[in-house]
Length: 248
Image 1: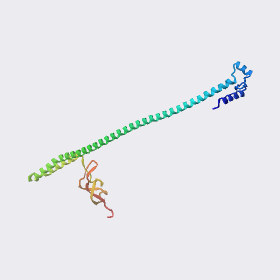
Image 2 (image 1 turned 90 degrees about the vertical axis):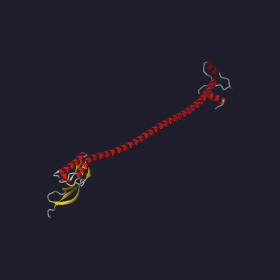
Image 3 (image 1 turned 180 degrees about the vertical axis):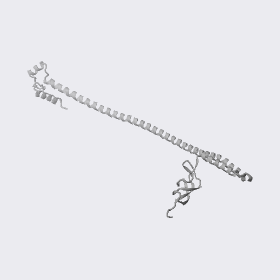
Image 4 (image 1 turned 120 degrees about the vertical axis):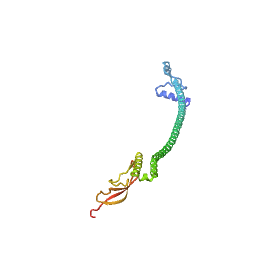
């Protein structure tokens, strides 16, 4: 900063440049014009120099205060940023904890569902086996009377067996009884004679040349076949017609 003397000289020089010739430097007596100007309420050169000093001091203090204020604002801004980062970090940690809790809950629920499904699968498998056993036992239970009738037929005396129509009628009765049991169980006889040969239902044991039948037509049934709905229990054994060559 300039010394007091230099500042005073600078101030006076400024006043001179502005057309004011009355600046007093301390070494000369002010002229009458200067005194008149002062009496008229105008500020003298010396007074102007004093004001310059005060203004510069105020300006220096203002600059110092502004610098301190800027530094305070900067420190405050850093603290606010740090606090904001801490707050966001806490929020993220809480959100992560919540997500982990939800994931654990879903995993536990999935495990329970898997265990329930395994138990259900085992239970249904057991029930299916029990139903099959029950169905088999029920069918056997229905067949037992047929077996009893066969045993009775074998134990009858010779005169009963040789009696007219007695043996045949007894066998027919047993046969019809067995057919009814199978029909109740859903068992059906596979059609054969007159039908076209179907390898999924029929088993051909011979091919016979015939001019009276279409090629691959079943002409004779050797053994009956049975099915339940669309499931083949046993294919029928048949003889199949083969178209006879006309030249032969």
